[in-house]
Structure formats: C-alpha cells, structure tokens
Image 1 (cartoon, rainbow, N blue to C red):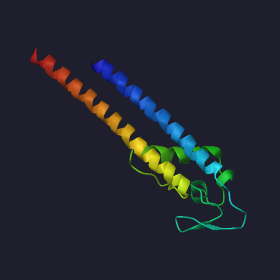
Image 2 (image 1 turned 180 degrees about the vertical axis):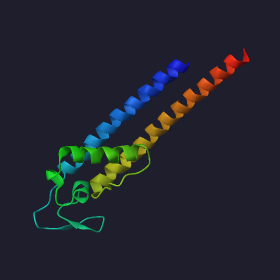
Image 3 (image 1 turned 30 degrees about the vertical axis):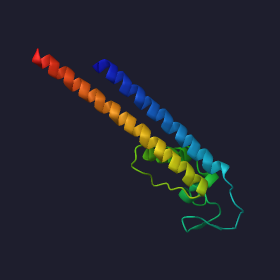
Image 4 (image 1 turned 90 degrees about the horizontal axis):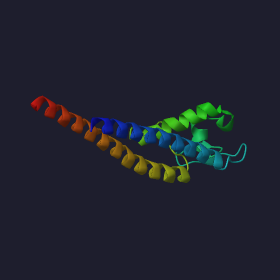
Length: 138
C-alpha cells in the first residue's frame, strides 16, 4: 500500500509541474497575443494606471515588454502560475478583462487540482500510519 501511495504522489506532483508549465505558457502567450497599443498613446487600464497597452507583461516589465528576455518573461509567467496553483497568490496581477477571465478559470481549476493532490497525500500518510500500527500490533 505504501509503495502504491508513493507512486501516486509522484505521479500527481509530476502532473502538477506539467500543468504549471502549460499554465505559464498560456499566461505568457496571452500577453503576447493582446494588442500592443499605439506608440505614445496611453490607455487607462483597469488598475487605474495609464499604459501603452493593458497587459500584465507591460505592467510587470514597464517599457520593456517584448524586449525583456524570454527567460525572464517565462519565469514571471511560471511564478504567477505556481502562485495561482498553490493558492498562495502572485505578485503579477491581471490587467485586462481577458486576463481576469483566464485567471478566474485558472484559480478555480488550480484550487480543485491542489485539493486533489493534498487529499491523496493525506491518504498516503494515513495508509502508512495504519500499516505501521498493524506491524507494531503483531
């Protein structure tokens, strides 16, 4: 039972990591796919800040956006994805309506996935404790 539990937890953690990567890629693509705005023309974004375009990328990398190294943009996307998935939150906030909608969906999905991971981990710990108790009783 314990070996099965270990395999299950490893599988769930691997799924969690892969989903984090996919969410990070989606979050990064979402910023790149949105309109960059017109040079020199500022828009009023939902955060109350005037920017050239209302994207998390422009808010997080002011003045750089597409020129920021792709590794930094990916790490920021991954930071947001893992913060959302573990329900701890992120320092990156959605700026546009589309980003807010995607964040809501990701938050609800991630909360469900994280609770499944936590429940399975608790089940493995409980099974290991029961196995240990049975061995000590014999």
